Image (cartoon, rainbow, N blue to C red; front, side):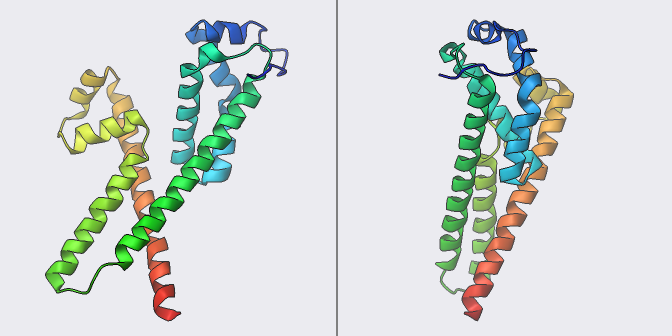
Length: 199
């Protein structure tokens, strides 16, 4: 699949160790390439939280396909391609969501104040659900346990086998991402609505 023509500081057997399920080799690959991959994600996504999520997804994929790795191909090149493909998919999904959101909103019919309030509530819920769907699986689970099932940090940590600090940090990251996600899409919607009114 991909050849290792990276620096000589990388053991020739690293890909083989990774293929055999070595967590130490996996950590070594992470330390070698995570900054490079994060930079690619940040360049395209323009959002540190999304870039961090992309990094997690790429290394999760690496672990899942480790048995298919080829000693004759570069891990760095492979990971770079996976990251670029991932961020392009994220961007396409975001564009599709924005288009659906705008169509959904512009198709609202005029109604009384109570109806408008209900529509705004529907809009907020819809947008929140879209944002939650963009979280990494672990962050999504933590968010749902906190918000939907009303568990505290200690209960979530015990349930998922994580440290309390990890739960707190990932929940905080999720909130920050969702605020930014909703704000950015609301701003885009307002601009589109203004353009529709003026032109």
